[in-house]
Length: 248
View 1 (cartoon, rainbow, N blue to C red):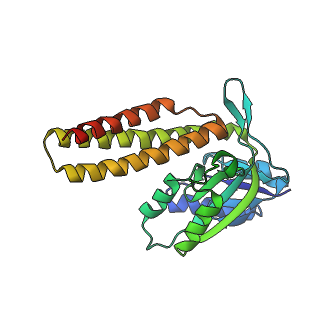
View 2 (cartoon, rainbow, N blue to C red):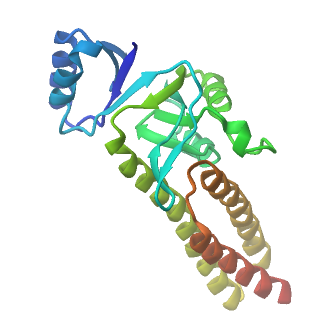
């Protein structure tokens, strides 16, 4: 059985190098920075080495698994995932990749390693969002290096809660930023600033809201996550600016 481990490396180069050395001593194969292929017999030792680095143990399976839930929408298993890991050229601005990820309903395992639903098309029937294949093609398009591993499941399910919380923070953070931008635009409109500039900025925030709404809908279908409150706040903020601008 093929097993993998991904972890959050320390910011200190010395600590990162020590972890890498210890994993190599255990016979692990480095696939990408903090993503390694490991021997099933060495799992306990590997997890012991990485216990302070939020390790996530993964394995490949033949069948396509659905997410599993316990109680009231509590996720116990994320189901089959597609792992995309990449290394972008230094000259490529981080904002370019960040913008691509804003349209990608995925799970951040660590910096430059993301997990996508194996059944993306089931939750994005209009094909408006970025799936694993599109994101991999995007990285190739900017001359980056990318590896894709399909049909992967998380073994140590105790890490799922943390990953879901990070999804929630990401979505709600984007919603909060839309509200913040709209408040600034509303204030500018009241002060009689250039309407054309306000309308241009409002259009950008409308597009951001539409994308966010699609992302939230995807997570709701996939993992039964409810973002209705955050969406309503950003919707009202956009509508409020739109109303005052159209009055002028």
